[in-house]
Length: 112
Image (cartoon, rainbow, N blue to C red; front, side, top):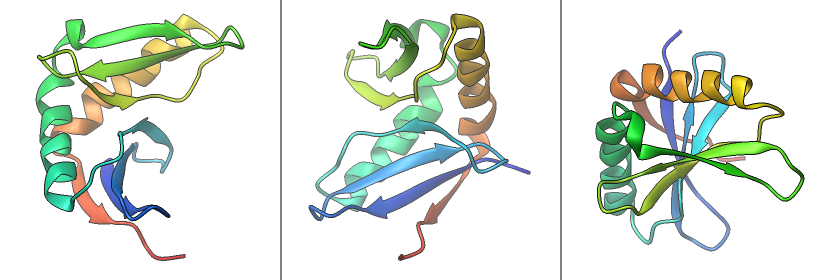
C-alpha cells in the first residue's frame, strides 16, 4: 500500500499535513500553514528534499528519545518525525519518508 500526504485544517483554521506510510502510520508532520496553497508547496518541498540525506537532521528530545527534522535547502524545517527509542529505529523512519514521499498521493483528511 502506498503512502499519502493527508492535508487537514486544524482548530486555529490553519492547514497542516502528515505524511503517512502505507500502513497508515504518521512518519512526518508539517508545520502549520496559513493557506492550502502554501501547504501544497510544503508537500512539494518534502518530495524534493526527502531524496537528500543531508536535509535530514537528527535531534534529541527532552526525554532522551531521538527524532528527525527534514529541512529545505534554505534550512527551514518542513517536517518533523515522532520520537524513536533508538537511532537505529529512527533510521527506519527516515527510510520510510524517503520511500513514501516521492509518489505519495495528496488527500484531504476526513472530518471528524
